[in-house]
Image 1 (cartoon, rainbow, N blue to C red):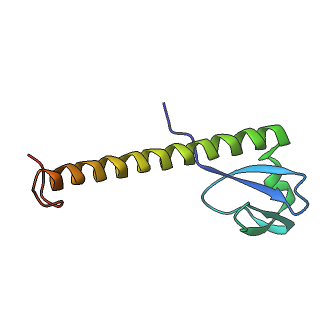
Image 2 (image 1 turned 90 degrees about the horizontal axis):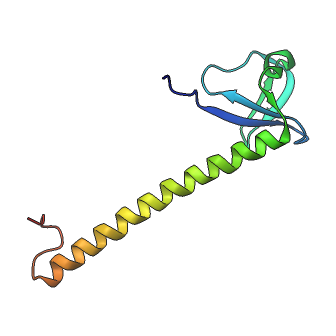
Length: 103
């Protein structure tokens, strides 16, 4: 089974139309301006972006999923950091240096 293409959520300048555009080569230039939540802007051909238009509900669900993925990554990183601190603290308490491998 192939991997899904990475996409970015774009909106029109009014925030009323939503587009899930695959990352990669840009869309053909034109007079229709779209933007991302991070402030990227692009003027594209309206016909080229139309195929990627989604309704507000799909855009909101995509955003929730992406935010959940970011939180999961942050939680995993925090868990690893905490475990690392616990291991180093245990080594210090045992009289070893904190940077010595345990073994």
